[in-house]
Amino acid sequence: MLRQKIANAYPWLKFAKNTKPIWLHCSSMEFEYAKPVIREIKRQNPAQKIIVTYFSPSAQRAVEGFAGVDFACPLPWDFWWVVKEFIDYHKPKMLLYARTDVWPEVTVQCLLHGIPTLLFSATLTQTSSRLRVFSLGFTRWCYSLITKIFSVSQSDQNNFKRAGIERNCLVLGDTRYDQVLYRLQNPKVLKNIFPTKNSSLRTVVFGSTWPEDECVIFAAIEQLKNKNLCFVIVPHEATAAHMQNISQHKIVRYSLFNGTLKLDDVLVIDQVGILAELYTHADLAFVGGSFKKNVHSVMEPLAAGNVTLVGPYYENNREAVEFQEINLKGDSSRFPLLARPVGVIKSSADLTKYLSQLSDVTAGELSLIRDEIKGLVQARAGVTRKLMNKIMQEFS
Image 1 (cartoon, one colour):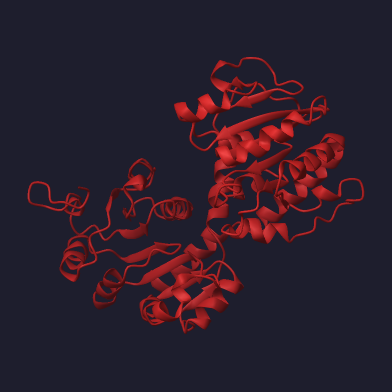
Image 2 (cartoon, helix red, strand yellow):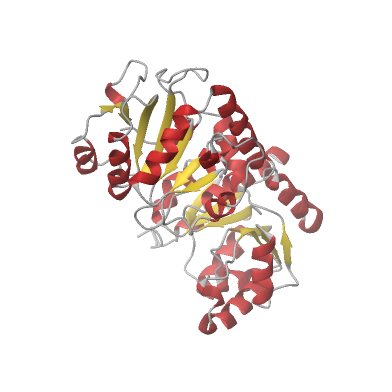
């Protein structure tokens, strides 16, 4: 229904005409990469109009509610006459694709209209279906139409070269780091329930968990009584059925809790939208989905300075892979399991070992670990301004 005509007009024709906006397209969750770009455009030029298109209906609320977006609508179907009507109506200055979602007819029509098309925070892994024999020719053709590709890393750049796309590529980095840090710098208010940082009690936050993760988590918790630990579990979906399943264990719900976390407490978060803030109170984090199929993003707990654990299914997440290979510089002789920003566990026994070691680490040692991990994330920030400087230099 999103792309149907209403009162004989498509939804993308309900905005003021000929405003010459900067056009951003995000499929769905790729909007997280676009948020800092939108803020930076408005910071540099508050009068500049911004139009954001999306493909998935799940992105509609987030896009329409974001400050700085002047107009949001679903992406027109990829037919030349529909896209041409969109472009002729709005007359965008440029099109910025976020991450991966490149549409061939949209790109062709922009090319015919003299509109620069830019792909930012771009990734292309060695195992991508876009590099397979039957899709490689299409990938090469489609991406070669783009005016400029700003890739995340050198390995992405190399894979674009493998696909025969080299002329228009530049390594720049990932704008998502800027978004994650912005979120942590502008936190939502939480209840005052956490131990102080110099307390001997250690807080573990299990984020975005599924039942497959929780089987491992509760089995480990049972082995860790009186170990100087308290636990916070944040289900990925706090549905009634999921909460009922978790409630078979000895827990307390966040909505009903008004005290301070103490030894062996298991607090379950039954409120959405506060996971990033919870990570700032953690001494160690676990990211869910990793015992199910694909791990969720580890970027937020890393940005908060947490050693972050993932299960066996983590290779879909490039930060989990990258940070798992980094050795922290501090003295790890007392806590070897905490010597890398990301640790991989395959069982409740593995998790028990990590948490047992965490209970013995001093507040001072944890502070050093936290500062080093934060520094690693901060070193990857600042991409948004670099991106906008490139755009203004070459395409304004």
